[in-house]
Image (cartoon, rainbow, N blue to C red; front, side, top):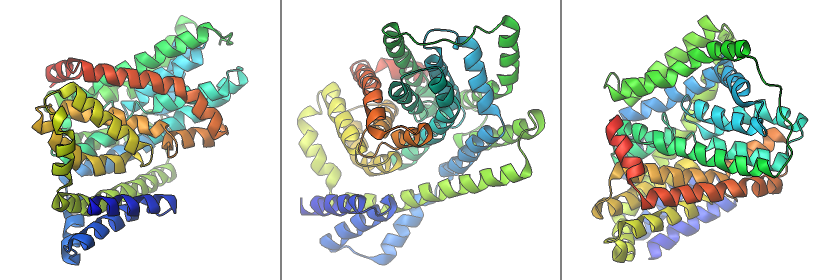
Amino acid sequence: MTTILIFLVVLIVAVITGVPIAFGLMLAGIGMLWQMGFLDWQSIALQMTNSADSFPLLAIPFFLLAGEVMNAGGLSKRLVTLGLALVGHLRGGLGYVAIVTAVLLASLSGSAIADTAVLAGMLVPIMRSSGYPMGRASGLIASGGIIAPVIPPSIGYIVFGVAGNVSITRLFLSGIVPGVAMALALTATWWLMCRRENMSTLPRKSGAEIRTALVNALVALMLPVIIVGGLKFGIFTPTEAGVVACVYAIFAGAVIYREITLKALYDCMISAISTTAAVMLLIAAAGITAYAITIAGVPQQLAGLLGPLAQHQVLLMLAIVLIVIAVGTALDFIPTILVLTPVLLPIAKQAGIDPVYFGVVFMMSAAIGLLTPPVGAVLNVVCAVAQQRYSDVVRGVFPFIVVQLLLLVLLVLFPQIVTVPGQWLY
């Protein structure tokens, strides 16, 4: 118990004082090892190296670069234009555009932060000029942004798969239906909201304009088809899928759309390298924490606490979901995965829960943490881009969080929603 207390105190103090979370995890792990008498700097260096030395993790820089190139090369912009052409004329149509585009962007980049920034940057000015209530509109954009960690290709699935030794391909394919369900839940909620408010609409596009928008976006729309098809038929692994996405995005942006220059490509690479370095440092630091948690027997202790629920998979999953969401309110997305996966996944396996199903539900729970204060990384992005007060965006996002939580409960009660389509696709 003392060991766990040291871990929590060190990590909380690090977060409160503004210490980067990677160094907070290092300090917490070192503190645990020191308390148990296992502090060995060679072992610490070895754990950090082994944690980051994984072939599947190579997918992260490629998917990050692909996302950056898509934004710079015009692919993301054309998806937004397509959404405007299809549903922009409906009451509250810009909200539906945000949801449709969020799903399309999620199937391209897998980064909630990047997708939210693109959505907010392109749609917030139009929403503001059209008289939309900005707190609610910003909340919708933020809620659409968290679809990215659930629909493939997701950076979160890659990290979870490596941390828990779970098939990343199966995680990718099993996340498609839950991700689409998130979008449908947001659509239904936005529709109910629009019925009570008089929102202005955009002019209906002609058939020719819709066809033009569809043709312009066709190259971008083909990328998720290529990735999912390649994974399903075993043409390439998730890591190789990252390379395919990266090459495809560069070719589309430079040759087909001709919007990306060498200078822009260089900037995209620098941005992707910086983000990759931050993620890999987190993974290396979490290796120390995972090592210390294993030595301390934390999984066994937590299994003892959750033991009475082991015979009731639904209750166990509900308890795990609550733990993940609670931790996600204080930790960012990747640290939540790295800290909790080695602790909770063995308990789920012991109870007979499918690790792939567990991973999808875990990812949705962690993604919701991106919308919850005090951290709420996606909320901060929307506030910065939309220039809205944090409190207004929190109030605007609250109804969408409730709906996503209800969907999460539905997935816990009916695991077949995840497992059956995932097995069929695989």
